[in-house]
Length: 175
Image (tube, rainbow, N blue to C red; front, side, top):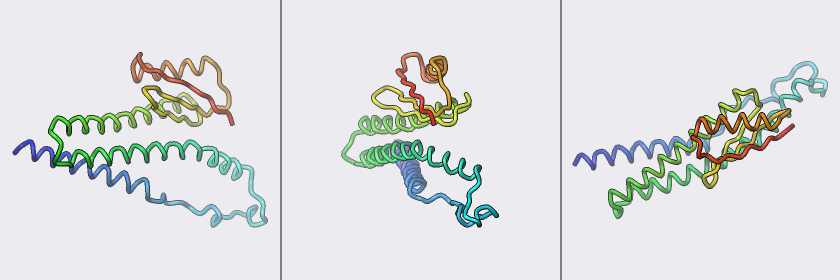
C-alpha cells in the first residue's frame, strides 16, 4: 500500500516536470519588438554602432542556443518516453526503479552541463556550450583570444567539478 502511494506520488511529480518542460520549450518568450523602439538615428534609416553590435552578438549566440534547445528537446523526449514506460503496469518494481534511475541520470547530466557553462563564463569568456556525448564532455567556448593555458584551466575546472575520470575536449570559437 505504501509502495503504491510512493509510486503514484513519484509519477505525479515526474509528469509535472515533463509537462512544465514541454510548456517551457514550446512557449514563445516575451520579446520586445526592436523595430517598435526607434531613436532619432533609426528614423533616418541609420542604425547606431551600439545597436549593430547588439544585433551581431545576438545572431552569434543563436547557434549556441539552437544546440542547447536541440539537446533539451531530445532529453525531454527521452524523459517522456521513460515516464510512459514507468507508468506501464507490465513492468516489475526493479525495472521501474531502473527507468527512474535513468531519468535521474539525465536530469543530473543536464544540471552538470549548465553548471559547467556557468563556471566557464565566470572565467571571463563570452559564452560556453557543454555537451555530454558517449561518456565524454565536448566544450565549445566563445572567446576573442585563447591559448593552451586557457584550455588547460577549463579542463582542470571540469575535472574538479566532475571527477578525474572525466574525458573532456575543449574547442575555442572566435568571433
